[in-house]
Amino acid sequence: MNGAARLRLVQGLQAFQQAARRLRIGHEADRLLTVLGGITDRELRFHRFAEHLRERNPTEAGWVIARLWERVTVGEGRVREICLGLLDPQRLQDSLGAAHIETVRGVMAADGETGAVLLGPRDQRPDAGDDEAVPRPKEPVGHRISLARLPIRRLLERLLFDPDARVIRTILGNPRLTEADVVALAASRRASAEALEVIAQDHRWVTRYPVRLALANNPASPARLVVSLLPYLLRQDLRAVASSCPRQDIRAHAEALLMRQLEG
Image 1 (spheres, rainbow, N blue to C red):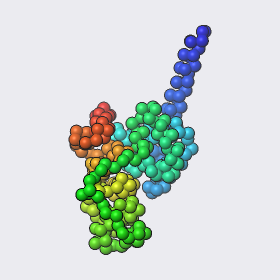
Image 2 (spheres, one colour):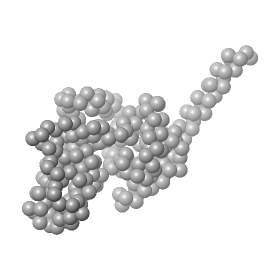
Image 3 (tube, rainbow, N blue to C red):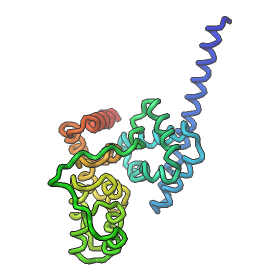
Image 4 (tube, rainbow, N blue to C red):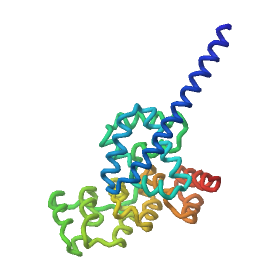
Protein backbone atom coordinates (compact mmCIF):
# COMPACT_ATOMS: atom_id res chain seq x y z
CA MET A 1 0.00 0.00 0.00
CA ASN A 2 1.49 3.31 -1.05
CA GLY A 3 1.56 6.43 1.08
CA ALA A 4 -1.43 8.12 -0.59
CA ALA A 5 -3.62 5.06 -0.14
CA ARG A 6 -2.55 4.73 3.49
CA LEU A 7 -3.41 8.42 4.08
CA ARG A 8 -6.86 7.96 2.55
CA LEU A 9 -7.42 4.91 4.72
CA VAL A 10 -6.40 6.77 7.88
CA GLN A 11 -8.58 9.74 6.98
CA GLY A 12 -11.54 7.46 6.29
CA LEU A 13 -11.07 5.70 9.62
CA GLN A 14 -10.85 9.02 11.45
CA ALA A 15 -14.02 10.25 9.74
CA PHE A 16 -15.81 7.04 10.72
CA GLN A 17 -14.67 7.35 14.33
CA GLN A 18 -15.76 11.01 14.41
CA ALA A 19 -19.19 10.12 13.01
CA ALA A 20 -19.60 7.27 15.52
CA ARG A 21 -18.56 9.55 18.37
CA ARG A 22 -21.04 12.21 17.28
CA LEU A 23 -23.81 9.63 17.01
CA ARG A 24 -23.08 8.48 20.55
CA ILE A 25 -23.17 12.06 21.85
CA GLY A 26 -26.46 12.59 20.01
CA HIS A 27 -27.99 9.56 21.73
CA GLU A 28 -26.74 10.90 25.07
CA ALA A 29 -28.37 14.26 24.30
CA ASP A 30 -31.67 12.51 23.58
CA ARG A 31 -31.48 10.71 26.92
CA LEU A 32 -30.61 14.00 28.59
CA LEU A 33 -33.81 15.53 27.23
CA THR A 34 -35.78 12.77 28.94
CA VAL A 35 -34.04 13.54 32.23
CA LEU A 36 -34.56 17.28 31.84
CA GLY A 37 -38.23 16.76 31.03
CA GLY A 38 -38.66 15.13 34.43
CA ILE A 39 -37.29 18.21 36.24
CA THR A 40 -40.14 20.68 36.76
CA ASP A 41 -38.07 23.42 38.40
CA ARG A 42 -36.62 25.56 35.59
CA GLU A 43 -33.51 26.58 37.54
CA LEU A 44 -32.67 22.99 38.47
CA ARG A 45 -33.28 21.97 34.86
CA PHE A 46 -30.83 24.56 33.59
CA HIS A 47 -28.16 23.61 36.15
CA ARG A 48 -28.49 19.93 35.19
CA PHE A 49 -28.04 20.90 31.53
CA ALA A 50 -25.03 23.08 32.31
CA GLU A 51 -23.49 20.24 34.33
CA HIS A 52 -23.89 17.92 31.32
CA LEU A 53 -22.08 20.43 29.09
CA ARG A 54 -19.36 21.03 31.68
CA GLU A 55 -18.46 17.34 31.63
CA ARG A 56 -17.75 17.46 27.89
CA ASN A 57 -15.07 19.07 25.77
CA PRO A 58 -16.06 21.97 23.48
CA THR A 59 -16.58 19.71 20.44
CA GLU A 60 -18.92 17.36 22.29
CA ALA A 61 -20.72 20.26 24.01
CA GLY A 62 -21.30 21.78 20.59
CA TRP A 63 -22.76 18.50 19.33
CA VAL A 64 -25.14 18.37 22.32
CA ILE A 65 -26.40 21.90 21.69
CA ALA A 66 -26.70 21.22 17.97
CA ARG A 67 -28.76 18.08 18.66
CA LEU A 68 -31.14 19.90 20.98
CA TRP A 69 -31.48 22.78 18.52
CA GLU A 70 -32.15 20.34 15.68
CA ARG A 71 -35.04 18.80 17.59
CA VAL A 72 -36.41 22.19 18.56
CA THR A 73 -36.36 23.52 15.01
CA VAL A 74 -38.24 20.57 13.50
CA GLY A 75 -41.15 21.43 15.78
CA GLU A 76 -41.15 18.69 18.45
CA GLY A 77 -43.59 20.19 20.94
CA ARG A 78 -42.34 18.50 24.10
CA VAL A 79 -38.70 19.23 23.24
CA ARG A 80 -39.51 22.88 22.55
CA GLU A 81 -41.20 23.16 25.94
CA ILE A 82 -38.20 21.62 27.70
CA CYS A 83 -35.65 23.78 25.86
CA LEU A 84 -37.43 27.12 26.18
CA GLY A 85 -34.93 29.31 28.01
CA LEU A 86 -32.38 26.50 28.24
CA LEU A 87 -30.04 27.63 25.45
CA ASP A 88 -29.52 31.10 26.88
CA PRO A 89 -26.02 32.36 26.03
CA GLN A 90 -25.64 34.69 29.00
CA ARG A 91 -26.63 32.05 31.54
CA LEU A 92 -24.37 29.52 29.85
CA GLN A 93 -21.48 32.00 29.93
CA ASP A 94 -22.10 32.69 33.61
CA SER A 95 -22.15 28.96 34.36
CA LEU A 96 -19.43 27.64 32.04
CA GLY A 97 -17.28 30.70 31.37
CA ALA A 98 -17.23 33.03 28.38
CA ALA A 99 -14.05 31.52 26.92
CA HIS A 100 -15.49 27.99 26.97
CA ILE A 101 -18.76 29.08 25.35
CA GLU A 102 -16.88 31.01 22.67
CA THR A 103 -14.87 27.88 21.90
CA VAL A 104 -18.06 25.84 21.67
CA ARG A 105 -19.56 28.45 19.36
CA GLY A 106 -16.46 28.31 17.16
CA VAL A 107 -16.73 24.52 16.88
CA MET A 108 -20.40 24.75 15.91
CA ALA A 109 -19.74 27.51 13.38
CA ALA A 110 -16.93 25.48 11.79
CA ASP A 111 -19.34 22.55 11.43
CA GLY A 112 -21.92 24.84 9.78
CA GLU A 113 -24.40 24.44 12.64
CA THR A 114 -27.16 27.08 12.52
CA GLY A 115 -27.42 26.94 16.31
CA ALA A 116 -24.00 28.63 16.58
CA VAL A 117 -25.71 32.02 16.39
CA LEU A 118 -27.39 31.27 19.74
CA LEU A 119 -23.99 31.51 21.43
CA GLY A 120 -22.78 34.56 19.52
CA PRO A 121 -21.98 37.90 21.13
CA ARG A 122 -24.80 40.33 21.71
CA ASP A 123 -25.01 42.47 18.59
CA GLN A 124 -25.12 46.24 18.74
CA ARG A 125 -28.54 47.73 19.35
CA PRO A 126 -29.76 49.78 16.38
CA ASP A 127 -29.83 53.53 16.94
CA ALA A 128 -33.36 54.32 18.03
CA GLY A 129 -33.07 58.04 17.56
CA ASP A 130 -33.18 60.90 20.06
CA ASP A 131 -36.97 60.86 20.28
CA GLU A 132 -36.86 57.29 21.60
CA ALA A 133 -33.92 57.72 23.97
CA VAL A 134 -34.60 56.88 27.61
CA PRO A 135 -33.49 59.65 29.97
CA ARG A 136 -31.04 58.51 32.60
CA PRO A 137 -32.75 58.24 36.00
CA LYS A 138 -31.46 60.48 38.75
CA GLU A 139 -32.05 58.01 41.59
CA PRO A 140 -29.36 55.41 42.40
CA VAL A 141 -30.03 52.01 40.89
CA GLY A 142 -30.41 50.41 44.33
CA HIS A 143 -33.21 52.83 45.17
CA ARG A 144 -34.94 52.11 41.84
CA ILE A 145 -34.72 48.38 42.48
CA SER A 146 -36.38 48.90 45.86
CA LEU A 147 -39.16 50.93 44.23
CA ALA A 148 -39.63 48.24 41.57
CA ARG A 149 -40.58 45.75 44.29
CA LEU A 150 -43.49 47.88 45.52
CA PRO A 151 -46.95 46.92 44.20
CA ILE A 152 -47.73 50.53 43.29
CA ARG A 153 -49.02 51.07 39.79
CA ARG A 154 -47.62 54.54 39.19
CA LEU A 155 -44.13 53.38 40.17
CA LEU A 156 -44.32 50.47 37.75
CA GLU A 157 -45.33 52.78 34.93
CA ARG A 158 -42.41 55.08 35.72
CA LEU A 159 -39.83 52.31 35.99
CA LEU A 160 -41.03 50.00 33.23
CA PHE A 161 -38.57 51.37 30.67
CA ASP A 162 -35.67 51.79 33.09
CA PRO A 163 -32.36 51.36 31.21
CA ASP A 164 -30.85 49.11 33.91
CA ALA A 165 -31.60 45.41 33.41
CA ARG A 166 -31.48 44.82 37.17
CA VAL A 167 -34.47 47.09 37.64
CA ILE A 168 -36.33 45.31 34.84
CA ARG A 169 -35.57 41.91 36.39
CA THR A 170 -37.10 43.12 39.66
CA ILE A 171 -40.17 44.60 37.95
CA LEU A 172 -40.88 41.32 36.19
CA GLY A 173 -41.53 39.76 39.57
CA ASN A 174 -43.90 42.50 40.73
CA PRO A 175 -47.42 41.12 41.31
CA ARG A 176 -49.04 44.25 39.87
CA LEU A 177 -47.30 43.84 36.51
CA THR A 178 -49.61 42.80 33.68
CA GLU A 179 -49.02 40.95 30.43
CA ALA A 180 -49.84 44.17 28.56
CA ASP A 181 -47.00 45.91 30.42
CA VAL A 182 -44.48 43.21 29.50
CA VAL A 183 -45.61 43.16 25.88
CA ALA A 184 -45.21 46.94 25.70
CA LEU A 185 -41.66 46.68 27.03
CA ALA A 186 -40.80 43.69 24.83
CA ALA A 187 -42.00 45.59 21.75
CA SER A 188 -40.34 48.90 22.58
CA ARG A 189 -37.29 50.09 20.67
CA ARG A 190 -36.42 52.11 23.76
CA ALA A 191 -35.66 48.91 25.65
CA SER A 192 -32.01 47.95 26.03
CA ALA A 193 -30.74 44.65 24.66
CA GLU A 194 -30.01 43.58 28.24
CA ALA A 195 -33.60 44.31 29.31
CA LEU A 196 -35.01 42.33 26.39
CA GLU A 197 -32.83 39.36 27.25
CA VAL A 198 -33.97 39.57 30.88
CA ILE A 199 -37.57 39.21 29.68
CA ALA A 200 -36.61 36.20 27.56
CA GLN A 201 -34.95 34.60 30.60
CA ASP A 202 -38.08 35.00 32.75
CA HIS A 203 -40.07 31.80 32.34
CA ARG A 204 -43.24 33.33 33.78
CA TRP A 205 -43.41 35.82 30.92
CA VAL A 206 -41.60 34.23 27.97
CA THR A 207 -44.06 31.32 28.00
CA ARG A 208 -46.79 33.80 27.04
CA TYR A 209 -47.12 33.95 23.30
CA PRO A 210 -47.72 37.71 22.92
CA VAL A 211 -44.48 38.37 24.83
CA ARG A 212 -42.47 35.98 22.64
CA LEU A 213 -43.94 37.51 19.49
CA ALA A 214 -43.15 41.04 20.64
CA LEU A 215 -39.54 40.11 21.42
CA ALA A 216 -39.11 38.38 18.07
CA ASN A 217 -40.49 41.36 16.14
CA ASN A 218 -38.59 44.05 18.05
CA PRO A 219 -35.77 45.51 15.90
CA ALA A 220 -33.85 46.21 19.12
CA SER A 221 -33.77 42.52 20.13
CA PRO A 222 -30.33 40.90 19.74
CA ALA A 223 -30.16 38.51 16.78
CA ARG A 224 -29.26 35.56 19.01
CA LEU A 225 -32.42 36.21 21.06
CA VAL A 226 -34.66 36.43 18.00
CA VAL A 227 -33.23 33.25 16.48
CA SER A 228 -33.82 31.37 19.73
CA LEU A 229 -37.50 32.40 19.68
CA LEU A 230 -38.27 31.72 16.02
CA PRO A 231 -39.09 28.00 16.54
CA TYR A 232 -41.69 29.05 19.11
CA LEU A 233 -43.70 31.24 16.72
CA LEU A 234 -46.87 30.14 15.00
CA ARG A 235 -46.30 29.39 11.36
CA GLN A 236 -48.15 32.46 10.10
CA ASP A 237 -46.04 34.71 12.32
CA LEU A 238 -42.86 32.93 11.25
CA ARG A 239 -43.85 33.54 7.62
CA ALA A 240 -44.34 37.22 8.41
CA VAL A 241 -40.81 37.41 9.85
CA ALA A 242 -39.40 35.57 6.83
CA SER A 243 -41.09 37.96 4.40
CA SER A 244 -40.95 41.35 6.07
CA CYS A 245 -38.29 41.50 8.80
CA PRO A 246 -35.87 44.35 7.95
CA ARG A 247 -32.89 42.30 9.18
CA GLN A 248 -31.62 40.05 6.43
CA ASP A 249 -29.97 37.54 8.78
CA ILE A 250 -33.21 37.06 10.70
CA ARG A 251 -35.19 36.62 7.49
CA ALA A 252 -32.73 33.94 6.37
CA HIS A 253 -33.07 32.04 9.64
CA ALA A 254 -36.87 32.25 9.48
CA GLU A 255 -36.93 31.02 5.88
CA ALA A 256 -34.63 28.09 6.73
CA LEU A 257 -36.76 27.19 9.73
CA LEU A 258 -39.95 27.22 7.67
CA MET A 259 -38.37 24.94 5.11
CA ARG A 260 -37.15 22.59 7.81
CA GLN A 261 -40.58 22.39 9.45
CA LEU A 262 -42.24 21.65 6.11
CA GLU A 263 -39.72 18.91 5.36
CA GLY A 264 -40.15 17.47 8.86
